[in-house]
Image (tube, rainbow, N blue to C red):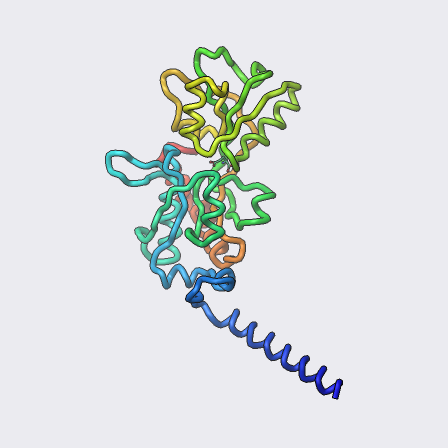
Length: 275
Ligand code: GLU
């Protein structure tokens, strides 16, 4: 009797496993409740069914993702790249829906499925690669520093004891901590949620330096401030997608590499005076 029971349990377990496998492999439908199975069915097909590619972009980084105040449109190289990916998946480059993201919000928005892709000056790091799929890089920048012109800083070496403002969840703090250690200076960090808050803190003297990638700082430089020439830690930007969505990652990487191979990527970068 005992043996019969064991056999019965074993057969029943196998049957359940087979059914589960079939469901995972065969269905491209999103569960109605968007529940725990959502990760399993994330796919390029889901985007095709929806008819639009949802992309998280920056709206405050000139040339990459920037809201044009006169047209109300978000434009830049990263928007053009999103259009190319929509063209590949949906056969229509206009089928994108953009959502503004920050360094802090872009990961969570991808995690909860509100967006399919992040194309938002997102630096590829080994640590982030454990959580997201990244395409091969499409651009390389470096961490830079914005200071008040009258502060008397000529470079990082002058910043012993200075307070450096950085964005939460950005790579800037790690890059500058390492650089400070290398040249033997001590700096303090103050973290902020957004770049406008960092600029306000610089203007009011709460921080001595506003640090992030040079491309991002370019959106905040004005008559009273300047970007110093120092650059730290190359920042390679990649298109990020949810770890479970491997077919989307493959499709995106194909688009990135096809654009590079054909020379079209260079034309797209040149359009925005990037290289
Ligand atoms: N690119 C850097 C990063 O990914 C700076 C933050 C940002 O992109 O806003 O951490």
